Image (cartoon, rainbow, N blue to C red; front, side, top):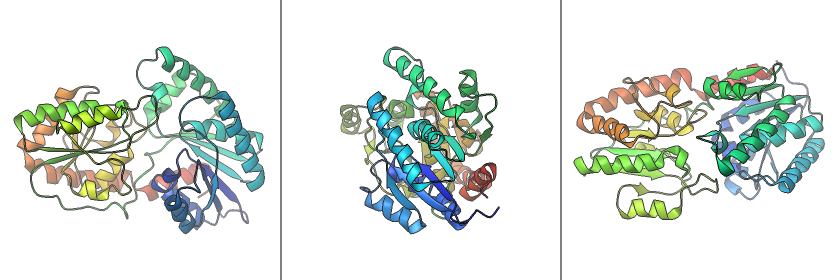
Length: 380
């Protein structure tokens, strides 16, 4: 399909850098197809690196007043009004929104602004839908259910990154019967940027990259590290990720206690995770639930074996015993045993890492994933 002259696509995200890290290949594909592409996120102009990278792709940058977490009716109404104004100014032919608030308010705004085509991408269910809903979480989940129902009534198609999330939304009655649903293999991974790297020498190093949220399994990772280090004191456990404002966020004091006890080495938030993957032997993500975990795909593309949970979104990335191991959710002891298998049988690391790379190339190549999405939207 050849786009109409100067046809415009607006893509809305919850964080400036995510437009580059998670949607960069998709944005470049759209520019290459001849579309006028606009990227919108909170404080985008203040992030000089993200805005510079996007400009290099040929993408125009726009700021939007949108809080990624929390539900404040007045602030959210302002976000909705601002998005409507942006769309009436830019006049996009297509809006693509991803993550919770951009999907909810972006799709509503696109309907109000009479944007012809409106697509939602659910990249994970997040805090409100993870675990038991009691107290404040129950209120948030009820509100999110209502908002998703309203947004999906105005959407033309919704994309999920795993079938479990789609089934959850269906069971909650959030998806109208007439709304088409498509399943894609996550956001894909840029195989040109994340390339196989040789393994370092001993000792065996484990790595977890995640926002510091309890639902990422960070407590289980540190508990497993304590178990393993009692029997294998030379093993190393590395943690990369920044503190977060999410209600599920870990307290800084908890991270400091783990580092003081030398259970893990915490590197904070970093701009480029590739050197950390290259310095590791095994990538670990004990998450409770994901859309499709991007960090796992990046580690696979760099040829690392994976330990992750038998949970929605995570289980799709591992063939148990081939490119790594699946472990139960919220269980430190099985996680520790999986880690020890690599320590006690280091000959597993290289062939499992090679298998990870093969799966990434076959299933998660960003070019293939984006071609699928563009085809589903009639933009390819």
